Length: 360
Image 1 (cartoon, rainbow, N blue to C red):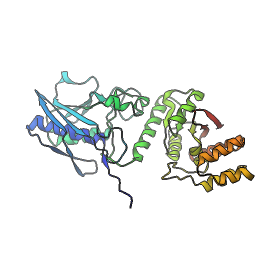
Image 2 (tube, rainbow, N blue to C red; image 1 turned 30 degrees about the horizontal axis):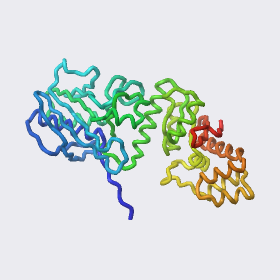
Image 3 (cartoon, rainbow, N blue to C red; image 1 turned 30 degrees about the vertical axis):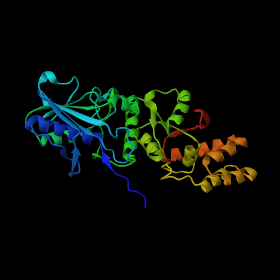
């Protein structure tokens, strides 16, 4: 029996827990080892407090993020909240006023520099649900006095280099994210939210074209050829159909699809989710497609006996069948246009980051 993957907590949930722990020590003098907060679904969850210390009129508390079995770059990160009674001279240059808290970001939390995201330009990159979770958690301690709550992430700026934040216009650190407070293992929500955010930024930048790629190699391969602004690029991972529909719903008139052979072949086979778990590339189906597109004789025998899509591609190259490779790109284009309803251009990228075939 397969092991059940363990869920974890979002940065937003950890920030809310840290804020409540800090507010509790500041206002009541009580300091425990755990803190419990409400979640958007009405349930309550308990967090172990990593640090909680008071210095003069300020308390800093932190939670170590446990992302469960999700491969999240913030797993194990220290999410901190600094809380003090608010005075006008303490207000951050850009802050968010909510109820009886003034919310801002400190070291390791990014600032928004481009329009189109959930937070406004100039604000700390703290999304709406985490904001509300922080407010709800703090108000379990205090509802009247106004508190200054500032969220930070230890080493957040370095961790952010492993994300797409800079491209989205979030500089100087991480985003405080989450829509439910819970991180699901290998979260589809995280991927699709990033795709949507990337497209929001592209539209706010006034772009009419968007580039969706399956990975960094594919993206690098098409960048030199297209010469589009940085905001035009959205890393879609395996979420092909979602990205095509999202591009159309954002009003882009052209969607550029860049991918390596296996992913483009899956698009040609009309597989909407191209991860191996959800869209297995069946060799028999791929072979049938290539036969339909002109592979025959000894070439088809080699293709039919191939163990991987890559092996099929090598056989096509060795046989000089560039026309069949291009036809696969054309089939991928047809699928993309059927799903999105807008113009789709397909770019096949090889392992050296070069565009080797297109369908426009």
